[in-house]
Length: 407
Ligand SMILES: [Zn+2]
Image (spheres, rainbow, N blue to C red):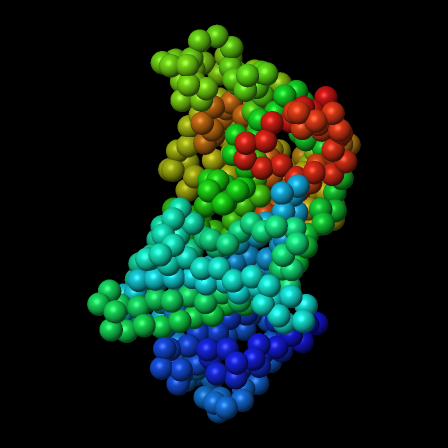
């Protein structure tokens, strides 16, 4: 239990004991009203401002901030540290607000400020600004955390996020504060890459990747009771030649390395190549029989929640970690439900079934099978070589754009 305290915050002298991810407070700009919600068992003490009755505190805040997921994990790579989470901003009022800025303050073990940064509508508008800025009355909006990557030296002990928002005419302004205490995640399962050859990570889980930016507040996901992002650490792996091209022959309409991709699955180096068990475990779920037609049918998704993955295999590593292998080739799965597998066993072949742009393997580590109540986990792999280096990586992270050799 961490007894770090916040002193002299804009909420008044509010002392928070047991900081944890998902602990947040919201205050009006008048600094009269303050509120604090706690996910878990945090205790609130206040100085200076007498605590209001619980109901008043809850009703007094304009926007409730929820940090998702809880806990927030730190992922380490060769270039630094990464945080992969988002904020759910719940507008508790009947007014519409605009999100006008987000500021982060990072504190070390001793509570000293180690880094401060912000984005807003005026001086620091960039790609890092969340695109969805309108907080509709009585609705929740997902905002991807714009401060996601840091040098290895930054002490990510406690992060305080302040959100500024107000009415369009600027007459009403509020702030909400969220506190995050990230936890370093050490992958428990020894993992190797599930494909062999020269591998390009077409899309991983960097800030702009589509895996991370799954907005589970959209109706299509809400209708399936999805409130988490199990693919937030996912990878789309393709096989490429030394020039980074992923198919044989001419491209469809240009020499562009990816936009001109052919329609024929068979032109791709990846198609039909084996998919290997990244780690040992037991097959707990699988699905086969879907055509390699690169199609996602929303109607099918409403009937079968895993339709987007096409043909897939799920391995339970028997330690709280599960591996998901998606878009496999129709009829290629060669394991059975309940079967134990060793690392490196062949599960099936790479295909283009389900919501697949072109033949590739989707791989992700996660907390369970299925699609509800499951979160993504950072994964580190051993036994590959980065192109340009002779060294075999013992335990390394991959992300969008990496090209590696796995023999
Ligand atoms: Zn994918």
